Length: 313
Picture: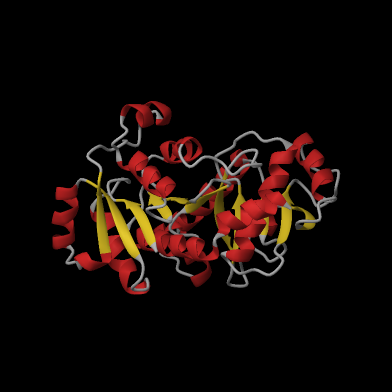
């Protein structure tokens, strides 16, 4: 198994990315190779600095970087030798089985759609986020930023593909799917959620449990939470802010430690022809480690193939 990592993507790269590889390698089986994308000279110097054995990694040269503030579409066309397009070419060719980056989020999302492309039948790919649960597990939130505006059929499809991720990667048997709304009643919510509810309740592919509210995010009422990307992004950043506020006040609790983005490492793009994970721009070494571990889980579960099969049913 080969997992590609954008070494130069992220605010703290390359030190954070290379150190993250060092942390991940002891937890990855010997048959997993991490393919490091970036300047070959830079990567070799960092491998020596962090004392990483060269037999566990490979290097794929990319002499350019798409910076965080660059326009995604323009940058992808103007910098074909940057780390993100190089990573996608490796994934598309089958040279690697997953691609991870904490670089420009827009370039990662646009690059996926124009390089490996969406799975046939997918209306819009989405980005999945995660919510810690009081019972110790994790829930999936989708979408968390890729699609600020959605149609009812897009939300329904999010429910289907996020359920597949929850079942095969998180190992949740028959995951419960809830639609984020203003109240539990069927007629509550926006015009979007009311229309989506009608589609969800007649769909036999998912275990739909109805509407959920904000205070259900962290309990076990739903394993999969469906919303448009605007709402999901607000939820995700609110959770991150709670963690930061508690840390500032020197409050420590095992449950709230899971609000730390580092504990997951990144957000997968679901609905594309490959395993892609987008990391936080400020990813630390711990976040990079967990992103690589999540990528291995995705490859093992063949989740994107499971999504393809589901759409053919």
